[in-house]
Image (cartoon, rainbow, N blue to C red; front, side, top):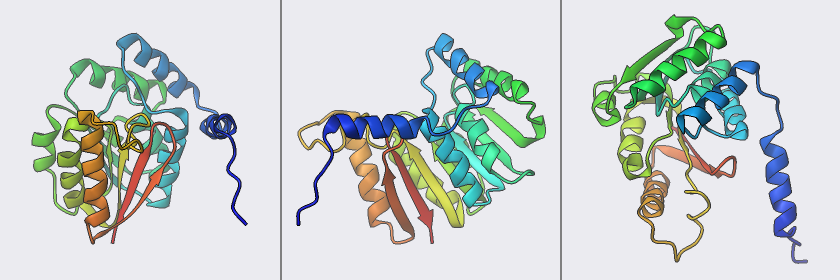
Length: 216
């Protein structure tokens, strides 16, 4: 018997319900207001919750983030990581780094748990230790996503996780006729991880798409 698929409106309702599955702490709510003032788009509520779960499942102690923003994803990752975990987070915009510091202060996060670097990710990632990290999260412009992912794979320990935000490129990835540069780069990234023998991958529908790959 052929499976019956729910109508689009019902599917969207389920997605919206899942996005609000957990309540956010006051520090994250304040960070989202800060992001709106700066014109920054943080990860969605559903993605933030999923980042916490993934960091917890990986028992992450050393983490890397490309794209600090105002610290929403940073805080979500550290909430799931081990109590002594340290997050190295990279952002090119100094005002983003400052906003993230305010988020961490609101959350009473010890300063020793974050290493915030203002700079170009391609240069900073190249200086980080090969095989020294449990989790790498990429939330940056799609034009550099493949480059960052390649560096992320290099940085991961066995069983480490590579996570890429907006992997569905705002729902354009499944539409073959779309030829936007960002969409093509995300397709290239998807092919890269699928063809990489050291990885096991999944594409998740949270937010605007989350690509998760575990290193063998």
